[in-house]
Image (cartoon, rainbow over all chains, first blue to last red; front, side, top):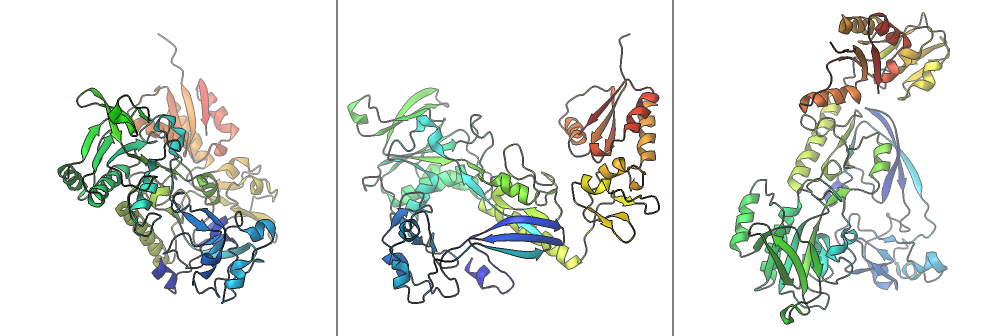
Length: 453
Length: 65
């Protein structure tokens, strides 16, 4: 990200949101809403004094609620740009008009409480949408007790714990600060489950294996259970990693946990979380006593994907992810020319696949730029200016805003780059002055005669 | 002999025609009495197309889009 920001050919706009897109391939006009961060990006040196002095603490979203941050904060240490933002829902100045500690201690004078939202308009030729995914919220599955039992954590929380700059400095710990002696990792939480998401989230098997590996590396003698439906380790080196984990002594149990409970049935179970699961390979119900449970949650479409789809004229699949032009032959382009998709906004995928798809999207954009022209559909509509009476009926009917009125000639004009060839105007024109190329009235009439012959 | 109606289906390229195509690739069957005419949008359908179909002996016309 730092090298993206320092590249002079790339303008990086953080804390911004695309609010509207108009135009067509080669000529998009994009409106971008830049949210106020209340810190002047040109003055801030990123020294971090404001974050030290800020008296207000709030849950750190990046640490999935495990750690705290201040009301003025950068989301994580490597954030680009290294400029903090004020969270107005927690900052006392915005809530009660007092404090101003950050302003007082900022030597650069970068704090500006008066900053307002700005709308910027830019012109671009192509758009790549890479809006990613949301993690499934497991508390809706009551039987797993997420949010009820302290030591049931999500994969993201485990990941933050294992990160050296995370809330526990890289130590895997229970709520009481001690290291777990046994951990169960539950696959397919919210995926491959017809109550939530039917699809496979694709990355969970491999990151669950990574978690098991990290546990074995960080905690001596830890017992790790993997509760899986099927191990899906398709990818370069993935199956080998699975075999290595088996050699490391991880217990693989084929079965989906039915329940997690703290009700002990025997003295040995006291103080443990009991994972109840049927091992479907030996057809036996097991009660596994563990200290910690990690839920490998599904990847799901982002909560705002419906709005984003509308802004960029994208379609969505039944599962809510953005629809590609063709599932096999064109998984990068979309139905809107000049708009490409890459990464988990299209479907759940791992990092190598995302890199491949994003590189392909960049290559597609570059090939459009280097060619300098675009190919458009041949099946468009054209106005016969001799017959057009200038009634303007077609103009309001066109869903693609492709028709304009030529005031000089008093006839309608169709922009062929915008026309999708739907033919609505052709059928509606009272003077039959619009010709739908490849779908003329004569052609369709002959076809009807043909199918009935 | 049972009545086998001739139905002309005027289908939108993006939804119903794509659906008929998908039925084919998914090896699903649909009644062969329906004869498909593809248009780029059901908005292209002119009432004269329907009249033409009836005139040429169709028992029904299905406009999908």
